[in-house]
Image 1 (cartoon, rainbow, N blue to C red):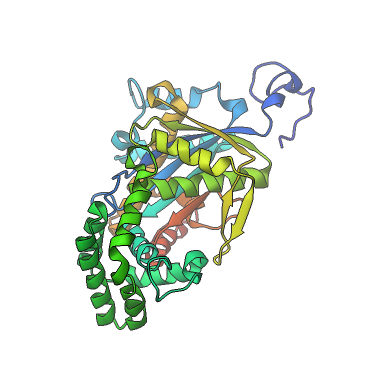
Image 2 (cartoon, rainbow, N blue to C red):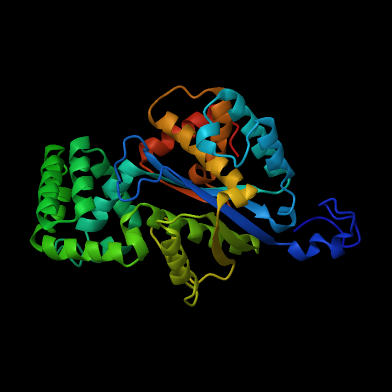
Length: 382
């Protein structure tokens, strides 16, 4: 809550008393969202190792004043909308955006971000697909809810030769039984070579039901409009809206999402929000301390808007593009200049634990540690 009395001048500078102005916005926030690294159903995009979704949680009392964003455009001599992909590539702009983000923090905005490492997501998808008790008699129901176990197994698959993961990624895009079977056999062989015979044996239990399993996976891809279910965006988006609901609940806030318009996923995202928000509230604890949540009481709605019509979406674009550039540099062991590192600290909600969780990372332990170490070297994380 804001530490201001009802009869004090409002913090927004309107000249009105607080009770006649922003008091009505107290506890109400809008989350402006954009994405980077989007490669659809291509889980193994070497040019885009991460998929990143997130943006800014903005106090509704601040929505009308977009002066800070206008000043950025003016200083950088940008006519039209700010596009982070084009603007975050040089040191001067990086330093300016870092200062801009600090200013957003000072007026009560907070970043929120979910990061997915695509290579790790392939490994996790292998475990999820082939260790499903419905299609594998060698595993029990523990494999449906023990996500700590599944993460440990995904780490083992992650360390397999790149070609093995690539073969699965290609097979999973077309979902034909013959290709899926060939991929599974390659995975099992590679695991045996790595002396992971127990995991290889368990995965081989999926060979006898490969046709039914493949058919089921195909169906899961088509339950959302435009086959959105085939993309990495969907699980990341589910994680994102769940985190926002939990964050808002912990802070006793009311949130609304305004997402940059996206032809491919707009209807799918809206349907996912409906499916997760409308049921009676239900929370199922998982073994890693997280939980599955259905039924939202604090994340109230989602809508979509053209970025050119919303300076706040443009600010989300710049944030997510900057973070994606930073993450890609760390991933490829490239030099991270001090200006880019200042931007990179804003990925912290996805990497570091916090009592009020505003992000998450679906990454291998190796890559998460690498990102964490780079940020902690300077002790400047947000």
